[in-house]
Amino acid sequence: MVSKTLVLCTTFISIVSLFMITINAATFNVMSYGAKPDGRGDSTQPFLKAWSWACSSVQPATMYVPRGRYMIKAAVFQGPCRSRINVQIDGTLVAPDNYWHLGNSGYWLLFIKVNRLSVIGGILDAKGAGFWDCRRRGGNCPAGARSITFNWVNDGLISGLTSINSQLMHVVVNSCNNVRVQNVKIIAPALSPNTDGIHVQVSTGVTISNSNIQTGDDCISIGPGTRNLWMERIKCGPGHGVSIGSLARDFKEDGVTNVTLINSEFRGTDNGLRIKSWARPSTAFVNNIKFRNIVMNNVANPIIIDQNYCPNNQGCPRQTSGVKINQITYHNIQGTSTTPNAVVFDCSPSAPCRGIILHDIKLTYLNQRAKSYCKNIGGTTRGVILHESCL
Image (cartoon, rainbow, N blue to C red; front, side, top):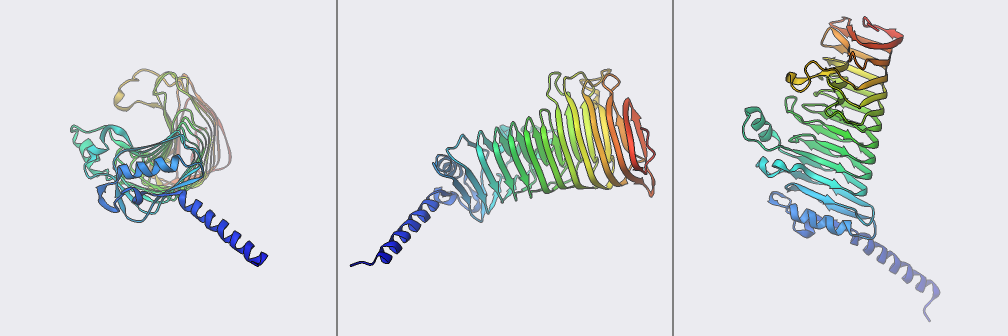
């Protein structure tokens, strides 16, 4: 007679085996669908096939990219998916050598209408140098592509990703809710045009943390319709700083509210904390913004509000910004400016800045107290103000 203990052990082993098979069945390796880790063969379709199977899984699934280099062209990873989905990248994704292959798509990797999505690890090398050179020469160039975009993603995560030399913006979060971007590294030359590190717009509940951004445009750019954005432990430089705007590109435009940046460092950037709007009428607004515990190292414009943004004097001469800016707090901002006016508030005569608070600001220029410039602004100062305040 078979002992009861043996029966129980056999049953337990069977259950564990079934469980392991189930786990394995929910992992979809791109190499199983023909992806080549040599950096030369086109792996676009194998990636899309692995995604399709993972997305249709009734249980949480992983699309897995092993070590190696995988060349893929513009790809759309479409949802909705049946369950939680994880994209685990242990290798490097490289764009085609010919920048026209990303060209006019507007994106390289696009995740759209996917809920409970995680993209973990990996390196994205978009090989943007050829595209930038084309733009500089003023030649016949494509529109360009953003490296990784989340569109209409709810409960998303981008973690541990490195993005190199994007043609345009590196990471875009658009029309999303509850997305975390953490532990990312973004690298592009200081003179690479329009290579914003992370761009957020029309999104609520986004968190950006523990990230190092070196690029040719804004380290983080914040567009219309952004609400409840939290940023912390950001290292920015080179780049154009953290920018809210440009706003007022269109007359009917949503605003930006409840944005916080804390415990961060700017090094050698063109700007530090910037809010900018076109000098023309708009329904947009900026309110309840908090910048706290920020270090500036040789930053050209550590604190700046520019409501008279009008590049090349086209589309806005002799107009004023209608963007209402109020309740902006700068607390414990210290370091060095490379320009005499470390604080610039160039606000609109038709929509003056209101409720600006400077609290413990310690900015110097050439080892002396920096200056400030104010126009059409109302606010207060608190604590220690080492620069010559115009408030």
